[in-house]
Image 1: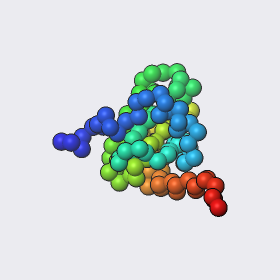
Image 2: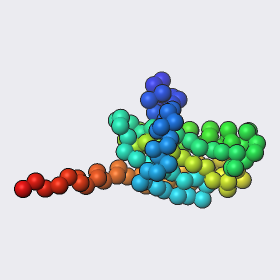
Image 3: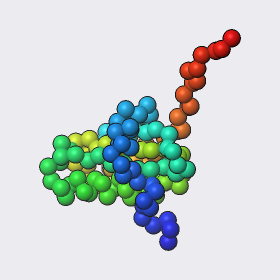
Length: 126
């Protein structure tokens, strides 16, 4: 039963986490979503979602998109590298049906790869 749902440890909850991902180096773009990602501090992938009123004025539509994002992430979480993910919905997502949203996400998740560590910037002492 532990595989059902999204535990607290797999969700981004702090505003600082969301802000850090706005400028993250990793980026994957699709027709309906944009995924920003960075190396996670923990051992598992964590999900954050941004579905604004620009996507749809109707809350029911925004909630439908978020449900599809959560379910897709929940199914793929075990196979994802330890990354912090921010999935930003585009306005085209409101007009897409559930199958199209899921198909795009299923295509994007496997393309997530761990980022290379930053090169050391220290000076050489001599």
